[in-house]
Amino acid sequence: DSARAVMHAVARAVLDGALPPAADEQEKAIEAHLQRLDAAIADFPSATQAELSQLLALLAAAPGRVALAGLTSAWSQASVTQVQASLQGMRLSSLALKQQAYHALRDLTNAAYFSDPSAWQRMGYPGPSDI
Picture 1 (spheres, rainbow, N blue to C red):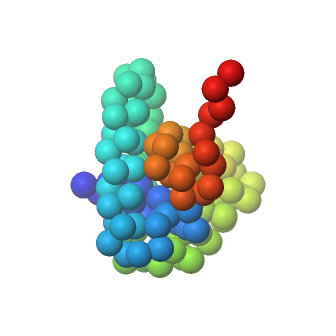
Picture 2: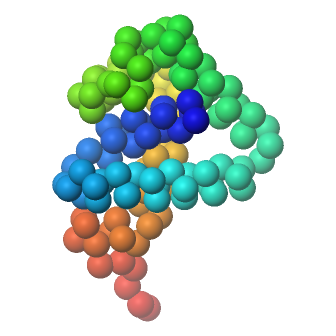
């Protein structure tokens, strides 16, 4: 549950503008995204799953969240702007660990979300062309 709260907040921040505008539709899109993310992670090698589990456990704990992400609010309480600022701080950090954590969170979020063709429609992308 705590890792899910982290990824829910990250999804809201990373996908801001790509999610449906209505709150109820947005929540449904995020829930579907989290299910796709769970399925993708289940297919990762066990060593990768363990590393991701460690990262999410660290981010879910208040001391880790503050130290690694610089976020003082709980993930579930943080605004989109606060999470975006936190992610930007990780991205621009001089510490490789913070940069790697940022890229993992962003890449996992984008891959799971944009693998769904319904996300393509919202962006105006018609999908792959037949050759």
